[in-house]
Length: 372
Image 1 (cartoon, one colour):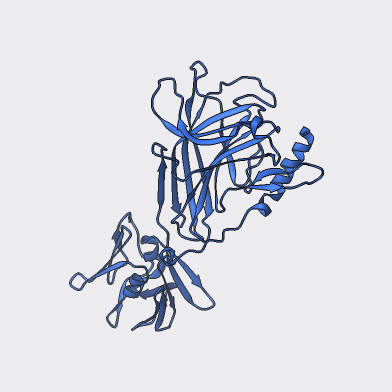
Image 2 (cartoon, rainbow, N blue to C red):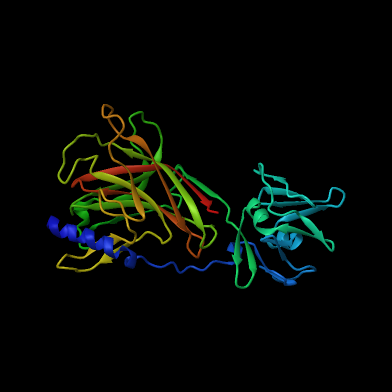
């Protein structure tokens, strides 16, 4: 393929990536539903995940603050509530977070609580403790939504933070590999594509396994990637995502190669997506032969995409030492999980160097924190 045609493919990929992506179709079960409770100002009925709750006293507005009954609030969020009639305090606990409220006061203590004052005092109305909904929800790791037209306040528990470490000492840990930006009719005998868990070839002969990606760039471009599904998240929830990993490379800097330098022209990219990373077929467009492309916006070579960002290149840290060396790379993003409570992490190399590229992936750390 001529290089000008290859550039046309790159432009088409950027324009068509979003339409090529396959929608998530998995359903999620009841175990993924996060606790929630909804109150309506002036109403003696509330609604949580188990159905309608009869209230003895209706929620009300106090100087612009929605005040709701403490016990119905706690039960809706699956929080433990303890009432001390002598000290006249309300203690709540949920997912390791605690708050201690005192009737007649706007002060509050608890986990990570420092110098916090409630916008309204805790009060007793006909035997029921009422609390400011949003402030207490924030302290218990829940979000609050106010609907002005219907005068409803919704308290929704947030998902838990999720952390995963992958070292590949025992296996691939569910990671999958793939290859894109190459012709559909490519000759496997000359592309040398492979993805496997192998012993990393280190000079000190230490035993360390990683995920190996190997491929010969014969098409003026080649994208090789490893991807992993992270499940068990809150559905349709925004997360701050953090990724750290070690990439093992044996390429020295300052070398010369066809299409670009051996180390500098192989761009390492990483990202998170809500749809499973897959290779899809791009058929004939403007007389360009059918190509395999990634169903995510990774950009092209030195250009970043909306989904994948450049985090480094293939140049090893010390050119004077032979063999593979590790480079630590990092990436952060903010995005929403899909309806199945999933996100996918993807790490890959986008190569302009028209030659053989080999790298290993190891010590991957993924942290996902639900955004408030």
